[in-house]
Image 1: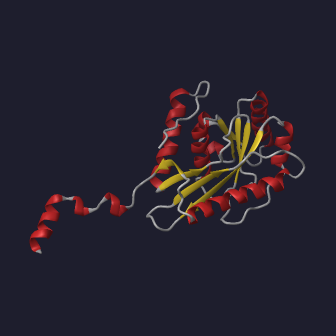
Image 2 (image 1 turned 45 degrees about the vertical axis):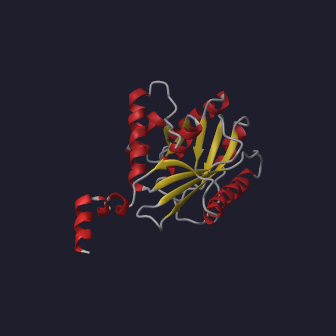
Image 3 (image 1 turned 90 degrees about the horizontal axis):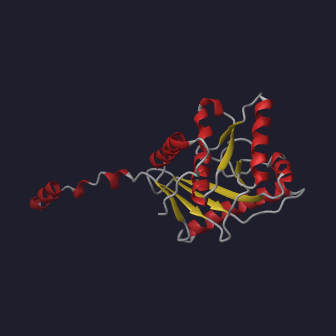
Length: 240
């Protein structure tokens, strides 16, 4: 597996590394694995990563994706004040009922995108909700894209699977860049749906194109297989 680290931020230092480690540790404990299905073209800053919002861990997975792509990603966080250290890895405050702080975060991201060095993660459905439906994309995506025509719009699909392992598996798919325009919200929504379908198709055909983005916790029978204990194996053989 290709090892990736967070993209260095000015003044972040050790604090950013600790927050990054916390995110990765959480993902390892809660998932069997995280796998990536990416497009051939690659992704570079400035860009806006546009993803569906079907799971609590979506922000963590987008953090891992941005690190894998080598992008200094920013994410607007509604509950930022609960853990303001997310600022060290690109989190920006976006609280309900505080238009001034939300506007400040928007201005900060637009400035970075215009300068050509930033990547913004957006969940344009606006709400965390259950899969598999996609809610209509909010007009904020088109408004931001219109202000930063130099930024690529890149669709991302995130899918969670629970079944053959003790813990769920997560899959992330990165699509080809989109053009901005009046129909951007509808086009982006259709493209994110396409990435979700790409994941499903790849799973049906064997999943050989997935790259391991994060290795998680093994199943209990893999961690605690008592057949690996020589004394117990020998005792069982003697009883036969």
